[in-house]
Length: 364
Image 1 (tube, rainbow, N blue to C red):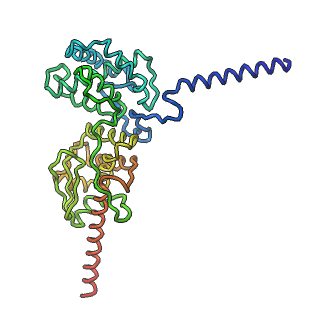
Image 2 (tube, helix red, strand yellow):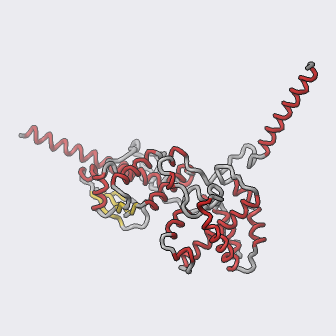
Image 3 (cartoon, one colour):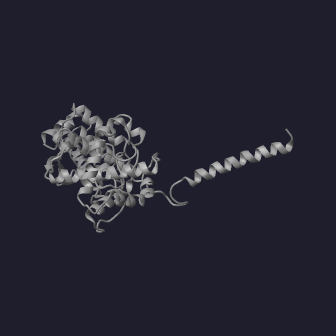
């Protein structure tokens, strides 16, 4: 091989590499120097490895992550049935119209997923149409108590409801909004991202009194410090209040479905912190209370918690593990003031005990 041949081979190899790199760059979604806004994530492996079943759907797949799996084929016929019901609600709404509208949102929808969508364009659009119409029809039938074959089997309904709330089992909210606006034949429904979903809660004013403690004593230790536990009448589990030595906590029943839901919502906050970390803060609060089974028993006796898991040990392990896997900015979370106030009272209680003990020793 002479020098000219070697040079030609080098040029061909170099051109091939350049072409490959250019192709890869052209296939990237979005625009240069513009950050992509993912809203539908995969649960990190270090979080999911202990309880994978709590993050994966059991009956119905929504979105591309579990699309086409054999375990969910039984529900696919119901999706087609729900599509027919959706179209029958407004005869002016056609499949052609739905597909044309969704095609205009296809690129944006694909960019919502943290993991690459490995579906062809038509398959992706069909999935969005079926899944979006299924969610709309399911909610309409459930809310309106319309008889349906799915609802006839009592155990199916809670499983489907839970599947629809899983972090990985989602389609972009603006797809559902678009399909719903086509159903209503109105432009009044705003089209936005998942960030428009009402998942945010009101923050409490930040305290400026020193550095915020990272935890609080356990339920048993708080009781020994003189703090009184009371069940608060509220439907919002985040509505926790501490005042005048009384800690009010809304009732919560913990079973597998509720546990899975909490895990997925906390995981969503961890991935998309713009919504705040209120549920993460709540999980850390509960994890601090439950150090031993004695703490669980105490709050059961107060009517604050109903543990439907196998054992109290399982509930303690669940909250402690959830706390370990979660990041929380302790200087800016909605229970910050509560952490400060509770720890301050416990410190005063401890100092009072020391003073009384010292008086007993030196005065006797």
